[in-house]
Length: 254
Image (tube, rainbow, N blue to C red; front, side, top):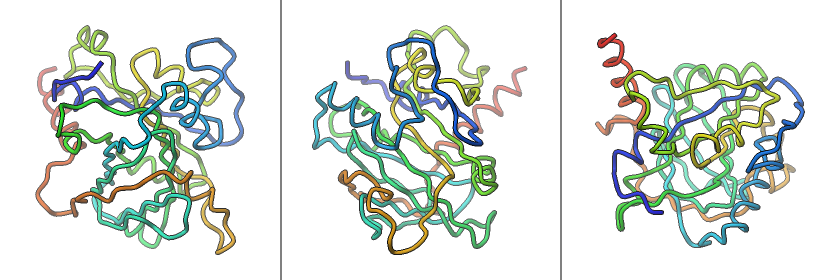
């Protein structure tokens, strides 16, 4: 059912995090999303979910990538040549049912370092007609995430649209939506208990080793629309800035 309220979409996109240091076992308990989980090869889960739902293959879901402060963001789709190259925060639109490779670089916190996360688009938002660009799925890469990735670990996040009924039962100023799970847990299943999984973000892992990298490393071939990427320093308020303001207000009310 389409969600028409701006506040519902902008405040209810939550992440669950897994810190993975090596191969992990699948969760054993049965649930709606099993046997699908975030440990399957990038793109597999999104493709299956898109086929089951008969998604509109032409719909482009806006995505917004934010870094701790500044940096560059490149977006790839089944090609070593980036389709998007811009400054953070970067906004672009992509197909559901696909995964895309990102390149994060030029970060003042990590000079000379590059990180190649992937984003797997499981579902789309349903904003008011004509306003899709105002409702991107936020991918907020924290300094802690990037440090873990650079240390050789894999951080996996499942972003989900929170069920408005469960959200209404908790004071939004006093809850901490970012949950960290055990690596053996099924984060996709866990996210499905609280809302609708939208995206799997994998930070860390394999990096390009040369010109002979398989094209599948760079994504599954979905469409990328560069849109109007917003360069850093434009004065636009970032979603993470809003989150910090809410957390600050919550601490002031304790």
